[in-house]
Image (cartoon, rainbow, N blue to C red; front, side, top):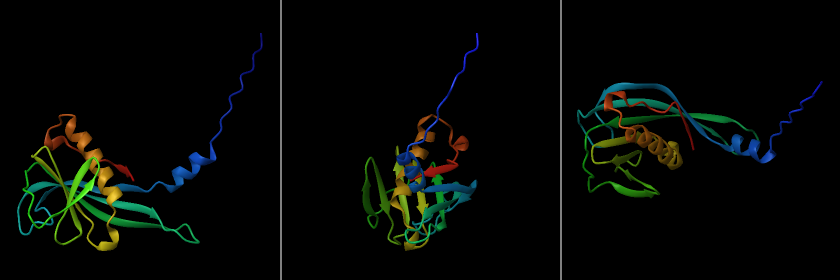
Length: 157
């Protein structure tokens, strides 16, 4: 008995467009051991640092992709919220902006702190900040020891 099986594959145009519109950040280096968290003056707070390259398509006639470096720091130290920090509410997370205006800080469970250093005003991307915080919280929530915590290889925002 001969039986032919035909499998049809199709991709919705909407799906293709949404994939193309998605911005991504790729972990270029790290995590590496680090001392000194940004945005709070001179300090020797220990932690880890990773460098992400944010990929965003520039709007306009051409579909040119720009890569922007952003430093992400992670420490198991409880850092107090300073009065000079501005609160930015990004549901469900609260991210604080330092007085420099380029470093964003998120605190989790009073013993984990994330620092996102955009370096210059043009690099600030709160969607990236919100999504990397979500992914980093996932790693912390699984009960990993601090030393075993990793940075996500890809962050979509």
